[in-house]
Image 1: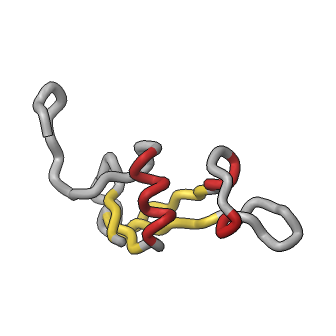
Image 2: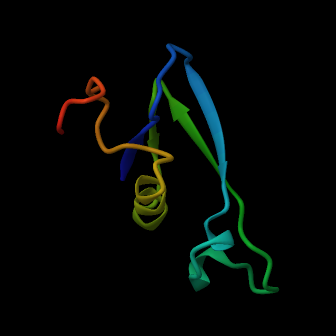
Length: 77
C-alpha cells in the first residue's frame, strides 16, 4: 500500500518511526518475546510503500494520508 506524508516539504526522504502495538493490539506487531515491533517508514518524495495493515494504522491515526493531493483547510474532501 502506498501512503503519503501529511506535510511534504520538498525533502527527498523523510523517516518516521511507528510502533503500532503501543495502542493497537495485534500479534503481527509483537515479537515472539513480547516486545513491540518498531517500524522505520521511509517516505521518498512524500510517498512510502508499507504493508497494508501498517498503512491502515497510519491512515487511521493521521500519520499518513491516502493521496498526495493537498486539500486546503475548510474544504471537504
